[in-house]
Image 1 (cartoon, rainbow over the protein chains, first blue to last red):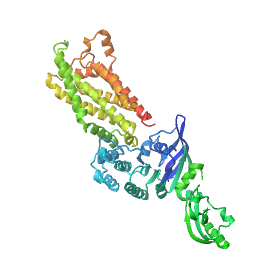
Image 2: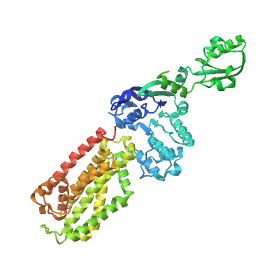
Image 3: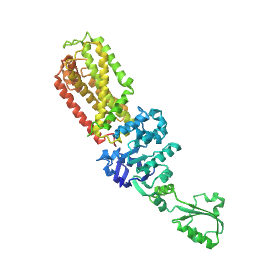
Image 4: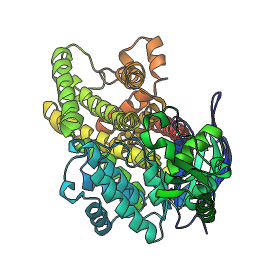
Length: 310
Length: 255
């Protein structure tokens, strides 16, 4: 079942095209990453999903409910953690969460509110005024506010921006648990290692367009970025293997004393490792050290943002 | 539309709690201001203003001050809450919720009415000791207090939606609400005005609110209270429809 369906969504700010016909489908129960550089359109897209911004064209549905025409049902399905650190200075943490529950029609929700506060280490601050909280604590309350009505779809817009390691671990543990329990999670983050460890599927936006959309595994596989790093004790690479060598970054080779006998070979498939080893054996070369390095999301991200595709 | 839904009740509670938490500023201060008006104007003008209705000037002034407090505070509640929430960004919590535009409108107006009535009642309790008041038609008093509070709450909602900065809201308040209130007959009867200004006063909807409210106390008014009720009711309906339309369109709230 589809949790979020985004169809040809467009948004213009005067002459700036913030979103140029974005289409995406996020399945129920997925942990989905929305990545892109600043100004790519991530927050605009999330704001359209949340009903905070009206699209100029296209449609968005959440569990089949149009976010404009059937906004009540759509918003009931959605919990959004906004990027900005906003709070109401008149209320305590508990009051804030009770009010948020009430907006979603839940008048007696203290049990779940207590559980959310417990999981986000907020219990000790329950009766503290929002103004008195640190930035990290305010961020936790924002997350708690998004979860008070147990939404089947949770959207986190840069939830860990500027927060400490402890909160990140607490937050991801709780969000991972909710995802395991069936909640769909959509995440935007600048911390690519977070996206890589949490997300099953990723869409990359650039200048308001989707430039990559795939599972994390497929994306990493698609980029020919896996490397076999070899340190030879004796002998050298055969000419055909030399074609696979990835040139070191400028100035890097000259600073490394062992660079003459250390090579990084590009491989597309693990089966190629066997072929390379066989060729080296035939040529009489002896391997001193060998390492297999897989491309990570950062490599893919940089390549996509540079070339526009992989 | 589920007008008395949990969401609606929660937003009313939140908007009421918001002003109650700073009651010194939102309730006590306007009561003190009204008492100062009464003491200064009442003392200075008591024997200088000839009232043709047989009511003392201080007694005439009290309902005007009560109604002025109701109106100003009803306006202040919805307008200040909205502009603060917009500028600090916490309006997003209401905008992200499934509350309908009807529920948002009704909740803001209900909370504005609560503040207006609470302050007005406070002003009445404190000022009633200064003159002998009668209550000829209490239902008219209640009707105009509620309608006036609802109308100014709605105006506050419109101003809060329209304004993007505090000074824009201040301009709305200082150049529209204050003159309309002060020139509505709070401090004088329009019968004492020259014919031109008397005609101009009839174009001011605030005049009908004050005049109708005062009728409830003394059974005497500058115009028929039914006409006042019709004017105030019509204005309220037009403003309410306009503000609901603004909320539905997302004007300056959803971009």
